[in-house]
Image (cartoon, rainbow, N blue to C red; front, side, top):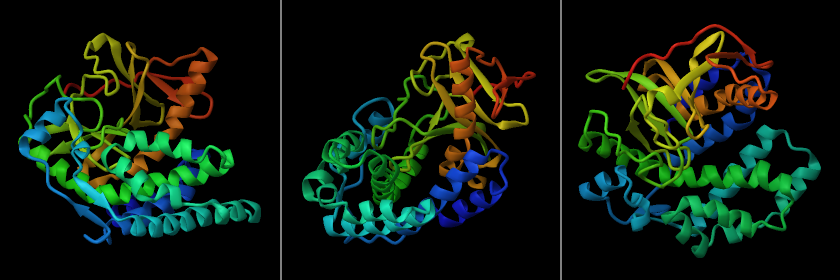
Length: 322
């Protein structure tokens, strides 16, 4: 995570047409910025890399083997994690413009069960299950406080602690894996096992336009086939299509007729360095909501929809293969 990349992306969408998206960016943008700042300030005393994954472990993970964090690659210091939960929690409270009653509930919340050795031991190796553990440990917590504040703070603090390891592992994998389409690639994150948050198709120097998936849990990214569902792996061309807003063809949903997934996908106007996947993931929530409304109304668009009222429009063809 790089603060400058996030700042540029937030500035780009400051006047975005969708009011709900602007509101989410105003709330979660500061949290993303602080998470990036935190991730870049952590030391070996805060999070220790026990060992680096071997080439065989990386390649096996990319093909569907155990996610590499499952091998106990990192160790998080509980005291540091507890400190940073409070740090990010304070930032989110401010950007939410929380009222006194909500702030009082937040001040009374006990982070200790979510920052002790037992919780972190599980989270270090299996972040997916860690979120189930958060729900179990906060069963008696006010539901609004948990969903709007506790879960985002836990998520972003873990992201900060995973980020450097995940980005370095992603860079290593990119140099080792095959560069041609490979339909044995896993759909979940090779690093932590989570489902990707967003896909992006961006230009590269030597490989043309390449699609990558981005994990919001740990910050990893990995190559993926253009004509393939990022949820179920289906690669039947007739089952896959894109839809987009009628005035914005860069932000799309990749629709799979086999599993009914709608994968948020950015067709980047520049290369991989010109966009921020975390911010783009928030921007794409507007299109996801419009699509969900269309599905609920029984007017599923075939190619293009208009955010806000799910109006069908003209064609928005895809841009080719992998």
